[in-house]
Image (tube, rainbow, N blue to C red; front, side, top):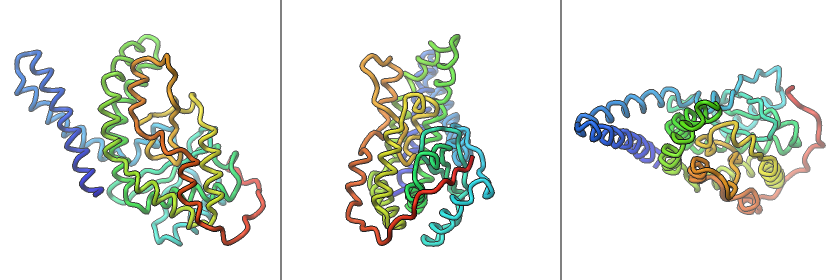
Length: 297
């Protein structure tokens, strides 16, 4: 199914470029030429994004490599979890965000990465951090992450351009106009990639890996409670499907048209409480260790 979704996503992206080319060609009375050029440009865009996909989400969030010496506790957790699941050890990064959260990315060549925010170990207890790391490992184990990463890149590049223009006063009108045009098609691509069953399976698998369903539930609730408008605007909504808790907030009633387009991104439900209810039957088999300081800053 992941291969089928990948094919549909790539095909939809190429068709979208072909449609844009046809419309532009029609304006210049050469719709066929516009269609051909649109398909060619769409193919180049897809190939380029396929190579850039494993690094794009991390670059958007300014992720940096996290050395073993800087976060030995996280590496210990990651080694233990990967040994239990038989997975290769992913590369560990961090992004300088105060909100506790984490996300994954992967390429089709087997390259995988886990990116944690700098606030993860500052605001969560040790057993809760372990539960979040288990969730990231469980997400990678589903095999869906390469599809999500590709969709996030294909959808995120035009949104990133619009957000960049929007943040510059002299280009803000053009940025808002561009976002109004690209938000819905970008959201459509990410919606095609998302698989609710994989979310449920990875949540349940993570609770079993640590045998601490309560710790995972508390971590999800804390991450959800920490979401801020500033944090949501700092990155790119197309990457939301990669996060443990999507960094998206409901929009206000007076939000402009380009912001309402971003509302189409579908990752606002289920909430942390609903997710926790799904693995409530996982019974802890040991008492968690006392909390201790293990910041990597």
